[in-house]
Amino acid sequence: IAGITQAPTSQILAAGRRMTLRCTQDMRHNAMYWYRQDLGLGLRLIHYSNTAGTTGKGEVPDGYSVSRANTDDFPLTLASAVPSQTSVYFCASSGQKGHTQYFGPGTRLTVL
Amino acid sequence: GQSLEQPSEVTAVEGAIVQINCTYQTSGFYGLSWYQQHDGGAPTFLSYNALDGLEETGRFSSFLSRSDSYGYLLLQELQMKDSASYFCAAPDSSYKLIFGSGTRLLVRP
Image (cartoon, rainbow over all chains, first blue to last red; front, side):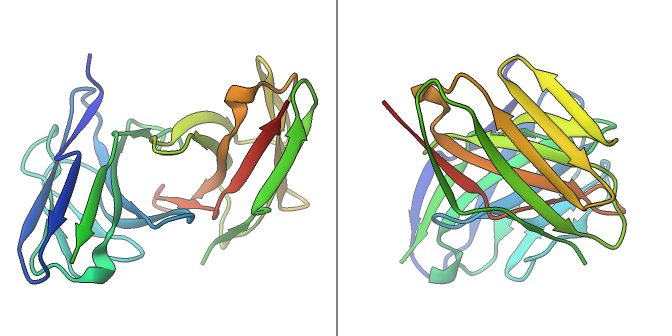
């Protein structure tokens, strides 16, 4: 069982480019989340999805979009990357109990 | 809104006991979680307190006092591998987790 996988592991991106970060889970969890973590700081929620077909905005949604076509996949898209989006991005999922979240290994994104 | 406050850094000696505190302000309260994150790694779930009192899981224990809006993570018999960042987190009314800014624990020999 892989749990949650994310791709790519790291990416350097030119400002203005479009980028999609991939996230897949095999635990059949209903809820999935995207966080960003800036150096030395905590996790901030970007977008979330409580179930396939629904999404919601978190604390810092501007500049990001998500989709949830099925239970397993939850891609995060940066339509036009900016340097302030340089961060480590974590995808997570949870079952019925949202307080227990399982995190993917993260994607380290640098926007130049 | 919700906010969680925790110390930015704690240092302790191998074999000792350390307590990491977390105070919270929430419009509703649904419990307190703790996560561990090693440098370069992903957060991993440690414990959850829905009710007042102490929850023990091996060397780690977590405590909650709802009346004081306060909780703590207690790590006993510290090992070098316990050096990591520790985050408290609380779910909001739609079960989205709000995280504290994290406490960096440094364990010294």
